[in-house]
Length: 367
Image 1 (cartoon, rainbow, N blue to C red):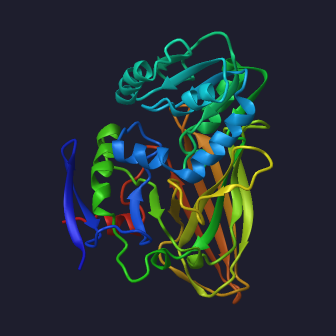
Image 2 (image 1 turned 180 degrees about the vertical axis):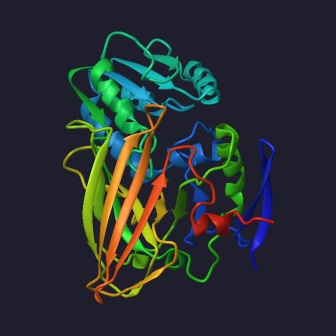
């Protein structure tokens, strides 16, 4: 039996469908996507900083690139993690930038405790609005989202390359790619309800409080099984941080259905390279703090069989804040019996519709 709980935000009382079972290792869980928003939380921060898959790759890149360099750490967090790692790897100097005030003040205390004030300069604000000299040789930024560009990495790092890095400077990570595959939402939650994890409710409320009104947040799926995919994955968003880095992009791809089932959307996940020639981090198949994002396309599930194909267009364009992207998806499913099914989704960074798609009407039921 589903559990309905309430959250209150700016005069709105929202009913939220909640999974009655507690979260546990390996069991899928549904959350709002939170990394795109200025919400600091010790639990989420610890989850990120203890991510071995992530940390090993960033450390390996810094061990090669940091010695003798000036390093810039964008989104440094309370522990000034990559500024410290860069200095320990041999960087001459570091500049660490943090935009969330709570995290900045904790970082200032920690900087003194680490006794690195003479090696690292800590700045509060958005890197896109700050100026400092001299320029850096290496920029390290862990502002990659579960959708690769969702946290504003393209705009922030394009600006960093233009204003904060010396010519020939290097960005870590090297590349981030969003992949997408056809799925049915119910397959992602076998033998359990499609409902928010109870622990996610404070984050839902924080996102809505930050924005001022509720909207259809992106849906983060933790621990889905790769066996739920109805097609192979294909790249739909590519961020080459040391190459041609585009803040607006549009990709059309064809996904071939590989097993029978019922499709209503796509599941997206991150591949990440910190160095050009390494095996990428795969957020679908590895244990990491990055999760998958489910994006609904059709009003109701459509039966599919091998031989059916989904033509998917995936577009990203900067939102009105000039940093975070809005995403727009359009799709046509061609079935073997000659039918076409059309679907679409507008997924802005903030604002937009609320309860526009059936899944959101299920997750946020009316009284």
